[in-house]
Image (cartoon, rainbow, N blue to C red; front, top):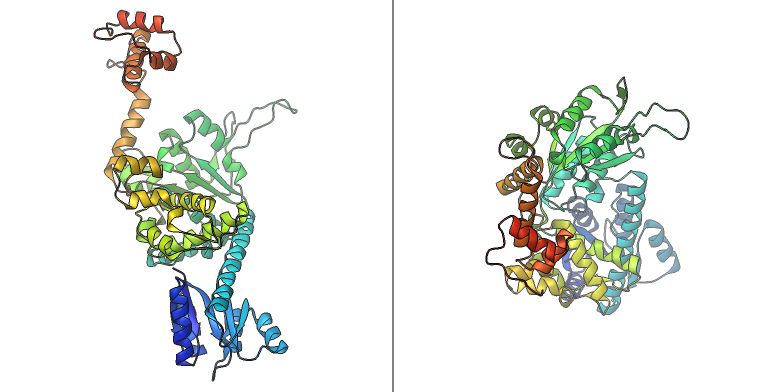
Length: 493
């Protein structure tokens, strides 16, 4: 629930306003002076809005607004005035107040002003975030988190931005590692320059080599132009290598060499090329564990592990789920044109109970569906049907199908990740080799493929034949040739 700071020197009015906001699903905090309010705003970045009495002794509402503007505290303010004089309203507007109400305001009028202020603030943040992302100038305020874990991340990101050495970002899938990399880039002296991303697990070794280092084709004219790689595209800026543990071993060595010397050799080139590039890498598995398992070269590990930053999972980030949910809601409502302005208390309680194995990415998808399903101005718990079913303790398989994600969180230190990756790498490397080390016979490979297809399709012959791209008669003939026809019957599936 959104944290609201209520500032009033009258105890009765302060209590009345706090009760009204609490009933509406907000979390009220109170201050009885302008000085106390400023102290709370400086120390609690989770405050989302302020209901501010203008007439107070010593530090009044005008002084509070003036100090907030001077210190860059961009929290929306709903001012409470006793006399709505034009001069007063103009001054409040000039100092940055979002709206005003006349005391004593009805709960309905106050809550309407408060919700409008929160909605306007969310839209402003979206516009600023989009501009910053496009311009490569994202700052620490774009990290969208206020818990202790995210405060440490913001501190480390600020420090990393002032230095030129590589940064390693570790965290579970969906935690926002690329966003953090963009923030580091945006706060550095490379802000506004190229930010280039490469997924190290998204292509073959040959394709990755070409994408990374480019190619010198040696021809002249338009027919044979050189092909620049990601390193050249990122010259003067930042190169993000996503999932560095999936980069093939030979390329790992060349990246380690580039980090050391600032030089690389494009394909077909005779002499190395220099590039001024800051390298940031991400991994969803602990880099030390990958190095111990032999999946990351030792020289690359020591080059990358200079400044590691751990991005905590969403389940360990307290109130950040509610904050992110509001952020996504404002964005999706604006993108889709839906008149959805808030999230009901029962929905926020539901979101706070989730383990979020898919982290921020899973929450984003859930909010998008909820915005599409919402029938009123607020997203309610029933607009998250997949979460309600999971919350009710349905069967794990049903939960998996409904949520389209992992059934349980997978920590970056989970050894099963390393085992699965090792098995996958070995299978990919050795599948064309016989136990003797020689290339496997074509007949043996064909037999293994048919056996796999039979198990995958539960011996449904029509489906097996379609999957293999052959006719059923050909399939049965091959089954007889390889001695796989025992106990099998023709089916009509």
